[in-house]
Image (cartoon, rainbow, N blue to C red; front, side, top):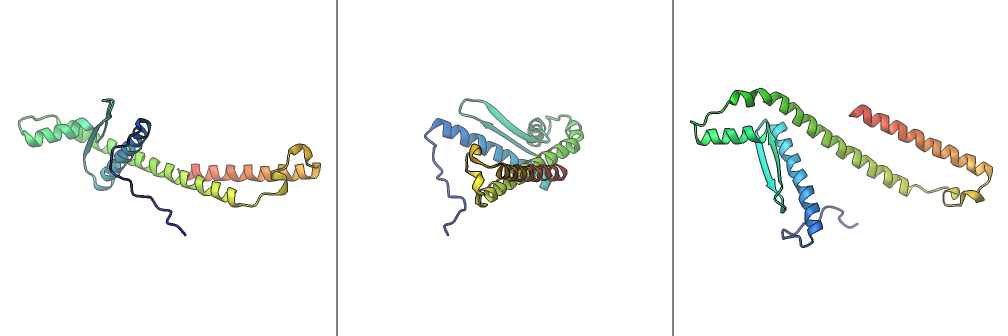
Length: 168
């Protein structure tokens, strides 16, 4: 069985602009997610600023970019005192928000995995004869069988949705 893991990406400039833009967006959000996780797990302060090719700035900071840069500036120049109490006052709130954000991203990942698993299970399950037949050619008995099967699917989806919402 072939290895289905990730393949190694060559570290070189992506030639197509649309592919480069897509990669930038995905990697930027992945980088911000990792930074958020480090903040939550290690109780550290982080600031990241990325400029796109178009010159647009994207940033992530915990507790926020300004307080991290102010702290950096103060550590390099002790005379440049800023109100560190303000940043410290925001710390618990922003920490909770970053934790919630990380939890939600993790939940979204779990839901995506569940969706893929369900799609695979649906595709692998053998289909009844009526599944591919034109509806006009089916008997009333087969149509009732089809209706019951679809109602079962609807009920299973409703239960899965309620379970996922309860977990969130």
